[in-house]
Length: 466
Ligand code: GUN
Ligand code: FE
Image 1 (cartoon, rainbow, N blue to C red):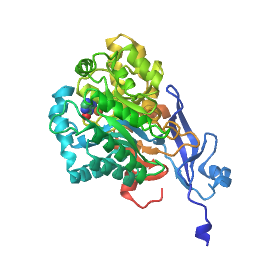
Image 2 (tube, helix red, strand yellow):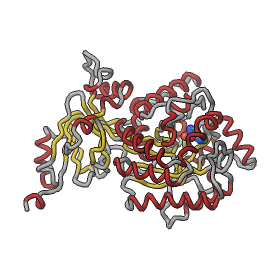
Image 3 (cartoon, rainbow, N blue to C red):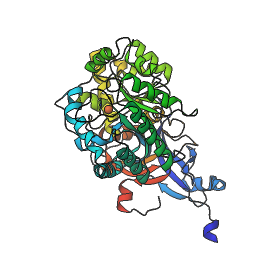
Image 4 (cartoon, rainbow, N blue to C red):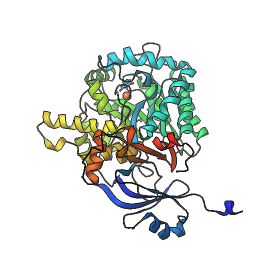
C-alpha cells in the first residue's frame, strides 16, 4: 500500500542553529538547515542552503523529499539538549531547603532522612514520575542521576526515564560508613549484588542502552569502606570488556577531605583512594572535585575520568570553588551538574550562569582574568562537555552529522525577560540573553533521539507530529 511504501518520516529544521564545535568555538549559523533521519540521527547540517525547500530538494535522495519542515523564526534557535552530570533524584522534594548547614550537617539533617524514606516504593513512583518530565521541560535531555540505596526505587527511576524518553545514567547508591537515619546497607556482598542487579535491570528494559544505562555509585570514599570500594571497582572493570560507568563524590568540602585522610591515612590524595580501588577510569563521573592536590589533577587527567562541576550547589553549601580553568588546561573533561537538592535550581541554564559567576569570583580572589569562563565556554560545559563526562561524547552534545538528535527549539519571543523591547543584536547576543535570562518558558520543543518529548508545543498539542 501507499502508506507502507512511503518512507519513514524525516524532519528539516531551517533557521538559526547554535552548537559548540569546541570549548572556545560556538558555531552560530543564521540560515542553516539540519536534517533529522527517521532513526533520530542527524543526517546533514548545511550552512549554505537558501531555504527549507531548497534543502528538501537537495537531500531528496536521502529521504527528505517529504520531510516535515520546521522553519525557525527571528527570535528562535536550535540548541543542543542540556546535560546534567549530577542530580540526586530522591532529594527533589527538598529542593531549595537546607542552606543553613554545611555539607556534613546538611547530609545528616536533610539528605539521609529523605533518602531513607525511599524504602517506600510508592513515594519513588510519585516523586520520580513528576521529576523526569519536569527536567525535560527545563531542556535537560540527559541526566546522570544518583538514586538511593534501594533497588526497587532505583528501578522505578529507570522506568520513568524510559517512559518519558530521557537519557539517563542511573545507579543504586552505596553507603556503609557514617550511616545516619537508617540510610545504610547490610553486608558488602549484598551491596555488590544489589549494584549488579540494577545494572542488569537497565540492560533488561533498554537492551541497547539507547536511553537508560546503569552505573556503579559509591556515595564517596568517606561513606564507603575500603573493601566495598574495591568490590565496586572490580564490578565496574570485570564486565566482559565493557566497563560499567561509575558516579561518585570527591573533594567536595575541606572537612570531607580531612575525614578521608583519617579514614585512609596512607593514601597520597583523594583520587588515589578511588584509583587504588579501580574506580577511576574513562567512564567515571567525579562530582565536585574542588579541593584538589596536583596529584588529584594528574590522576583525573590520566584516568580519563570526568568532573561534574556543580556551581550552584557549591555556593549553597559553601563548599568552595571548583578550579575549572585549571582542570580544562590539564585536559580533564568537565561538564555541569545541578546537584539538586544541594543546589536549588534544576536548570542547566542556571548552571551555566552560576559557572560563569563562580569563575568570576575566582578571578577576583586570585586577581586573574584568565580564570573567567566565557559564554562559549559555559555553553560547551552545559552541552558537549557534559556529553563527554557521561560517556556520550560521540553520540550527543552538538549537531555533528551522525550524532543522535537531542535538541531544544528555543523561542525567546515566549519570554519577556529575554526578548526585551528594542533588541537589535546579532545571533550571539540573542544566545547570550537567553543563557543569562532564560528558563523553561522559552523552550518550545525538546527532542531526544529525534523524538519530541517535552516543551510548550507538546503541552499545547500532544499529538503534533514534530
Ligand atoms: N555527599 C554525601 N552525600 C551527598 C549528596 O547527596 N550530595 C552532595 N552534593 N554531596 C554529598
Ligand atoms: Fe551530590
